[in-house]
Amino acid sequence: MRRHAVVTGGAGFVGSHLCERLLTRGTTVTCVDNFSTGDLGNVLHLDGEPGFACREADVSRGCDVPGPVDLVMHLASPASPRDYERLPIETLQTGSAGTNHALDLARQHGARFVLTSTSEVYGDPREHPQRETYWGNVNPVGPRSVYDEAKRYAEALTAAYRRAHGVNTGIARLFNTYGPRMRADDGRAIPTFIRQILTGEPVTVAGAGTQTRSLCYVDDTVDGLIALADSDLPGPVNLGNPHELAIRDLVREIQRLAGTSVPVRGVPAPVDDPRRRCPDIAVAQRELGWSPRVDLDEGLRRTMEWFAPSRLDAE
Image (cartoon, rainbow, N blue to C red; front, side, top):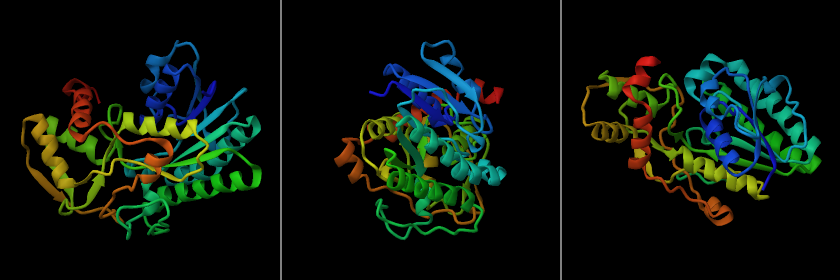
C-alpha cells in the first residue's frame, strides 16, 4: 500500500471521494487544487484528520510537494462541458503543463502515477462498445476539443514518460461518473435532471434524448482507480458501467424515483455531442478484478438524497 498519495484536483467531485477512500486505507493524502471548479467544502470534513493536507495550487504552474511521495493521482481538470467551455485555455493548460508537472513529481520521487483520462477521448465513437484499442473520432477544433484533446495529449505524455523515463504510469478512462458532491449547476445530465425534477422545473433534454450514456456510481469509479493504483498496469483501461441507457430513459427513471413528473422540454443538442457511449470493461475485469457493483437504481437514490431540497435552495 502506498504511504503518501498526492491527489491533484482533490477537492473536485471524484477527487474528494478518492482522498476520503485513501485516508481510510491509512494513506497520507495531500490534496492539491486551485478551486477553479473544485470546492473546499468537498474536503472540509477531512480537515484535521491525521494524514490529510490540502494545498491551494495550480498544477499548470507547478506541482511541488514535500516528499517522500509514493503515488500521484492526477485528476485536476475541469470536467463538465459548462466548465471547460468557460475555461478553455485553462483546461488545455491543465492537460498539458499540469500533467507535465504531475509526471515530474512522480519521476522525482519514483512514485506510481495514475492519470484519470476520459471516455471523451473516443469522441463520437464509430466503434461500439468502446475498447481501449479504439483510437476515437474526435473533432480537434470543435467546442468540446479543449477537453478531449487535453486528455488525449495527457495520455500521450504519460505514455512517453513511461517509455523515456521509466515512470511507473497508469491511465484510466472514466465513463460518466455520478454521485454525491456533483454541483447542482454542473451542467451534466444527472445533476441537471435531478435539480429540475426536485424543484419542479421542466426537464431540458438535448435533441430527441436517444443518445446513450453508461453511468458509473462514484464509489465504483474510486474502487477502480485504487485497483489501478495498486497495480503496475500501464493501461489505458476503461472504468465505467457497461449498462447503456438512453437519456430520455434516464429522465423517466429519476422521475420514478422522485415520485413526481414534470414536463420535458427539448433543447438543441450540443455540437459534437456523442450519440452512443458504452465501455468494454474486459481489461479492467481481467487485469484488475474490477467491475461496478452499484446499480443505477441505488446510485440514483443515493445521489438524490444528497441533492435534498435544502441543499438545492442553498445553491
